[in-house]
Amino acid sequence: MDEHAYHHGNLREALLAAASEQIESIGFEALSLRDLATSLEVSRAAPYRHFVDRRALLAAIAADGFKHLERAANAAMARQATPSSRLAAGARAYLAFAARRPQLFRLMFVSDLLTGEEPRDPALTQVANSFHLRFEVLVAENCATRGDKTVKAAALTFWSILHGFALLRMGDRVMPFMRGPLTDGDLREAVLGAASAIPGSIKPISFDGRGRAARRVVGNGKVVRSKRS
Image (cartoon, rainbow, N blue to C red; front, side):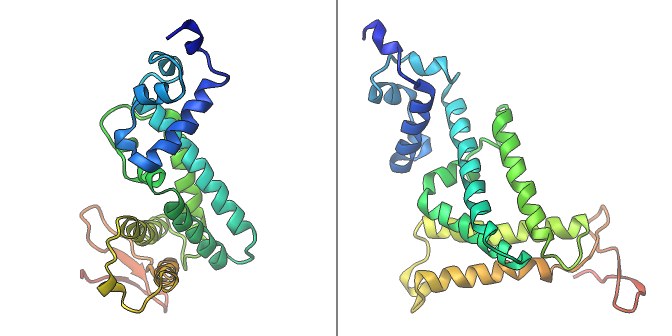
């Protein structure tokens, strides 16, 4: 390959675009910097001028994914007037993103980029944390009480429902006998309805350091100790 092959108009952006396209067809696990270089007609060493390794490239793609998802959610929520409608719109945007870009979704939420033992990319960590904190604020707007534990419990429960459904749908785990007469829209609306009810249903119960229910305030203002379930 000649010297020319080291140069590309904007190789970093070209690598991101090509890699994003490839992972949707082959999965992020199979992505190869060498194959990317070949597809872009640059030397095998050229990608390393922009990304120290494959993991760094994947982290950059995931970071862009969080930005795209947040923009889509913000655009959907901007048209809504109430906290509950904003929450539902954000949830719809999340599920739509997972359906439209399933492998990117997996890279963002299933890979070990944010959970593995290897050092985490600071830019990815920042944008992922920002996305989650924005999500918590949205959930908090719909909680009956806004104590930190209540909000975090509601946010994680809400997300678990959406995330679980997204992965089930993505992996074709919802078999015909399970859905029966339910259409895709019926199933999606049922999941969204159940998830949207979560923030208002989480009771303001605090827990001690040993996982036992601590005191809570009941309707008449009396402080009682909750029974363990």
